Image 1 (cartoon, rainbow over the protein chains, first blue to last red):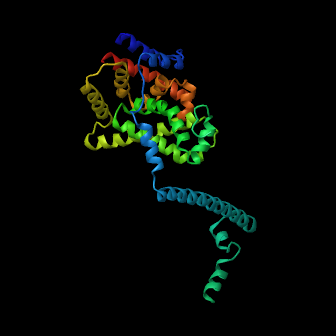
Image 2: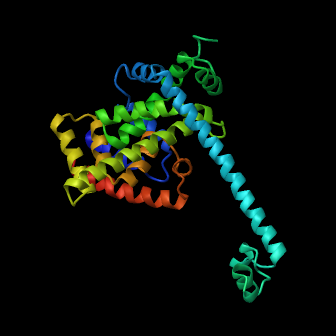
Image 3: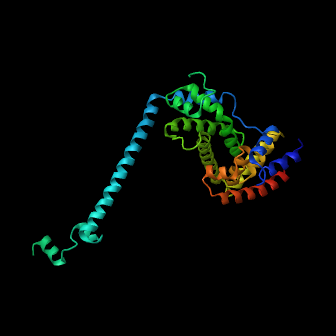
Length: 117
Length: 185
């Protein structure tokens, strides 16, 4: 195939009307192919299966920690929501004073409680 | 079953690989090696970096096989890993080049094209490589997916997690860019 024909084929393969599978097959037939070098798979297998036991254990440990963290984080969020709901039901608002449990107290009585005067 | 995985389903290969069967994982690599090569080399060019990223793709796949829930096809899962790692490499290169030049991205393209020219080869794959390397990375991925992998616009959008309209507009802009690049090659 002439370079000009190949260029048209490349540009044409991006046309919306062109079937991408057929176009990509055509390009492959014209010798446009990709592969890794010889011994690629062996190198990968060596790297994976010669990984020291400690590294594999570390990966497992990190995975377990992530799992535990997710559980703890979810439980924490649920507890916060429950706390907010209970404060709202008990105090009728979510103000700063409600959080401190002094929503219904007068300023004077707080001073009395703190200072004794 | 061990030793004769050529007829096995992907799910069987995954289970056996998780159990530590080298042959099963080799079969997975045999099935998807070329697909990964098309994505990685289509995006990064035929270089030693592409080989390294290709290796990383399969190592990452092996380490995350237990997380694969089988909701999508294995090929899609591998393709996503390949795209993510390749895009990370492109970002890393972009940062590296921008350290030396204010031109950043353009400089990277000039470097890559010059590198290919130095070999002086003129075969079909090389022509495609040169054209792809001249494209903006966000267009390059769309072109590589369609032209080299044969994915439809819908499939490309799903794999890349982009809206269909974005893929369509990028495809059309990529085609215009590609026409200009090929005119000069």
